[in-house]
Length: 269
Image 1 (cartoon, rainbow, N blue to C red):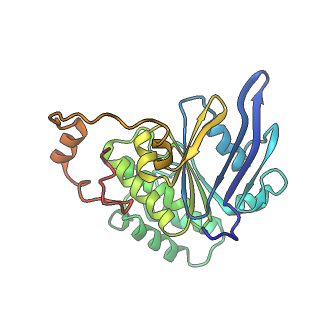
Image 2 (cartoon, rainbow, N blue to C red):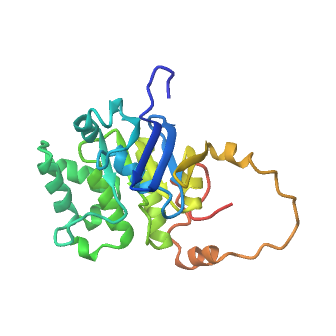
């Protein structure tokens, strides 16, 4: 990010309550353009509520937020034109093929060359071979990749992914991780909410923890690691984890490295 660029997302003092239930209690953070920002939190922490406010689906009680330079409360139309939102469940039509889903959305957005747009996205998300198949035959990971591909039609600069890998098996989760990493690699800003610590560790440029309606920590992974003292080194025999065994047996994900770090995103360190 260059110094003259405003952040893609800027949140200041955001509050939201339902009667006496305080869901957000003064949330502040910024997301740099072209980065992946992971928002961690347990169920009920307020992650989905925050995303709904930023995507203009809910109104905050107080505070302010800007997305792509537009005020969420005062310029909701401009915000909607700047974003795409992928919820916790894939919003795809299972009767249609993967290609037909993409063409339909492109036409609904009144874009020219809908077929070419669909083909480009199918190739980008490694779905070309399955383009003509009904989505009902897709695996969970394929549906999620198609869902994310559909959200990119029109090239929105900011994408919200609300717990995109919930309920997916380990292989499908890695497929989605690859897709998310590629988004940021091509300049898209991604705000990712997740309950999976490993997911945030592997993908995010910055990580914030939302707890009881407040951001209690916000920083890079290296900065967060400095909050705790280093563990004492003990030399013990390392037994393979269940995840190691799973991928050794089923293969497929072992050569994937969506982060460009030289690490397998399916494994923790």
